Amino acid sequence: MNYHPHFIELLVNRGLLNMTINGYPIITVVWNIFLLIIPFFLCHLLISLWTKTRLKKTVSKIKAGILFFLWLLFAPNAAYIITDIRHLNGFCSNNHYNICIENAWMIPFFFLYAILGWIAYVYLVNQMKYLIDKLFGKRVVLAYLWLISPVFSLGILLGLVNRWNSWDLLFFPTEVLNGALLYFSDWTYFKNLLIYTFSLYILYFIGDILFVEKIKFKK
Figure 1 (spheres, helix red, strand yellow):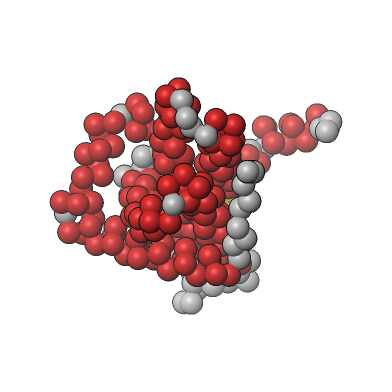
Figure 2 (figure 1 turned 120 degrees about the horizontal axis):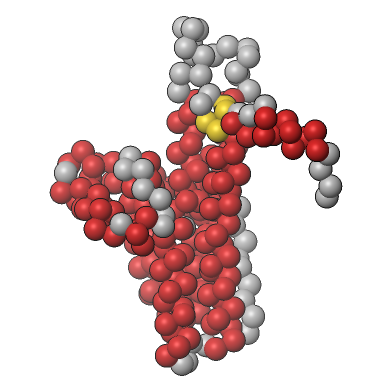
């Protein structure tokens, strides 16, 4: 697609790339959706690797381990989008009910954006679940389903509260791990982890019933 030069000028010179919704940059929506796509792509690569090799060779197993590790780093970004509904706070502070006609449209915008995160989270968990089922069976799947929500919750909180990105674990492992330990040593942090974990359990199991179709694998 060819863009008119005046359109590029508008984007750059007039700061349309810096447009915000109640302080939430529009460009961040695009960035978060990109981060959401990465774990789906990584899991797809993992599935393709398993389909072609059945992970019989050591090299294939190492590749699979790296892909799973990267998936684990980026996967919480899907559920993180749900928390962006927080940007509704104070969007019309001059009104007693915090609502005004100019910004009333923000409510469905952030609600639908959060639903996108919810759906992506459920599909993402299930995409890996069906691979684990093929590899290890139902018992490991059950353990995975109960363990993945606490892991996602920790990832969300490290991004939301501690402001770490997924890739920061690769460059600042000590600092990120020290931040993670707070959620097991401080009651306030641990309480948030518990509530997020419980909430993700609810969102997953409800979402799994409502809108998830099984992902088919090649034999």
